[in-house]
Structures are given as C-alpha cells and as structure tokens.
Image 1 (cartoon, helix red, strand yellow):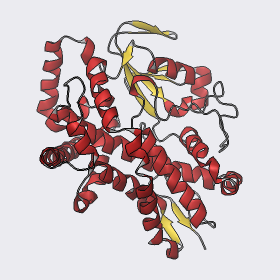
Image 2: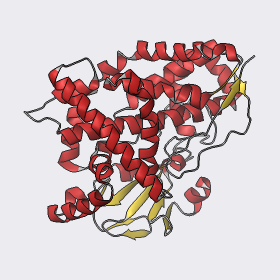
Image 3: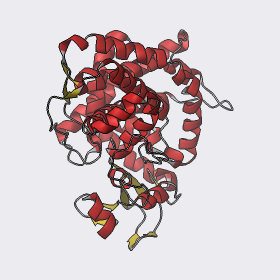
Length: 387
C-alpha cells in the first residue's frame, strides 16, 4: 500500500481521516522542516480564541487537555523553544550515559528469571518492563508504584488513534489525573529534599531566571513516560521480529556485535514503531498538487518514508550494515525526539545481551499478531523459544 501511495498518490486527501497523507521521504522531511507547518496553531492564533477552545477541551477532558495537549510534542514557537532548552539541560547526555550499567543490570536480571524456561513472550517479559523500569529510575519514581506506569501510558496514548471510544477517553482522563497528582507530589518532595533524579533536575533547572511551571514539569514527565515507553516497546518487538525473520542478518550481528548500534537504526527504519505523525498548515499554502487552508491537517507516513527507494537503496530489504541511515523514526527539526539517546541505549543493551545469552533464540509462533492502529505499530506478543 505504501509503495502504491508513493508511486501513484504521494499526496492523498482522506476524508475519512480528515487529513492529507504524505507518503514520500523528501516531502515528509521538507514538511517537518517547514515553518509553515506546526503541531498546533495556538502560537499563531489570537489568545482569546485559544482560551475559548481550551476551555471547551478542559470541560471535556480537564487533566488530559491540561497536560497532554501542552507538552513539548504539542507546542510550537517560543513556548516550545523555552521549555525544550530547559528540559534539554536537565535531560543531558551525561545523565543518559550514566544509566548504561542500570540498563545492563535490569536486562540481566530479567533474563536470569527467564533463561531456564526455554520460552517467553518477549513483549510482556522483556520489551515492556525494560523501558518502564528505566523511566521509573530516571524520574526517581517509587519502586512500589512502578506497576502503575504501563497501564497509565497505554490508556493515555490510546487517544492518539482515530478510532478511540468514549470509554477510552474516560480511561485516559483518569490515567492523566492520577499520574499528574503523583508527579506533582514528587516534585514538591524534591524541592524540599533534592535527589539525583530527573524530577529534581526539572525542579531545579533555570535559564535567565526562567523555570518550568508546575504544569510544564508534569507535562514533560508525562511525555517521557508515553513517548519513551510506547515507542521503545514497539521498536524492540518489531526489531527482534525482523531479525528472527532474517537469520542471515542475525548471523552477521552475532559475528560482529559492534554493528548493533547500526542494526538498531535499521530496525527502526525497516518496521517503524511510529507510523504516522501529523502537522497543521499554519497558513494557506500549496502542497504538491493540493491547496491547503490554514488549519488543514497533513498526516506524515513515517513508515512509508522509511521504505522510500528514492532515499534508501534496497529500501524493502533489512540490512543491519546499512549506512548512512537517515530514517524518520525520531523525527527531525525542532521536534526531534529528546528521548532518542535513552531509547538507543536501552535497545543496544537489550539486543547485545539477547544475542550473547540466547544463541538458539527462534520464533515459537511464525505469525505473531500486531495491535491494530494507524499511528503506533507494535506486536500484541512475540512468542520465543530456545532449547
């Protein structure tokens, strides 16, 4: 389908989805870097109009609209730039590098409990607990409350899919409310008694006497949970499935583990965990053969762009040696994923350890099922065995 779109309808308006789908790599990248498009229109809309709309949203989903709709992913302009600078200062590369031993320890601990079984569901047993645990460690989240993070994340991000229901909205609102309350309490505790964790860093970070507001801090932590967890789980499952379906590539990695970072980038390109992201037209403009009006939505098909033969040689082949690999998995431009270094670290440690400790790893179910969805692509489960 993606190949047909790229060849026949690279700009396709979908009345059902209420957006124009963009299928080619260069067009997607150009839109991501074009200041005439944005994740919101709030920064180019009169304040009174923004407040009226937000009042309607708050009446319907008060906590969800308060925190999810104002995070870094959903803002533009100076507000976005200011918060991104502050969060980048707190979530610095040194902080991420120092987590490597913790990631390795957790992966070893999880595998220690599974290795003698000879079988596992990779998604439930490894892919899910790893990012949840690491985000918990990064934030300084209480260990006895860690079990609540995965359900909260799944319930909140469900609203990004077009087919969500009123019941999904109720669950997302409850999850956002409960998570926000706990983050707020933890932030208050860190102001009084600082610790070596991200919440403390977000509380303390400042630039030119500017600090994160309480709502911005909560929204940032919620985004780290949702984006960092959902994307990493999907990338791990999709990537391992690709590797197991290409045993010659698995053999290459086993012979040369130094290629694992390159392989991670190829996994994200080949079977993108995030298939679609959207932008709004900030003004009337021409897009390919189409005329867009201010406020019209474009759907950027990352999964299609990552398989575009105009950008990638042998685009439909899985090649762990592929370089360069300028995939769209982490976005680009002003909204490039701040959590990319952590995701890469987790995936590199996870796959290096799997290859070393489970040399006979194979699929127990040759046709695992994917969860339905237009935005996120991830497996329901991934049954493995080794004996």
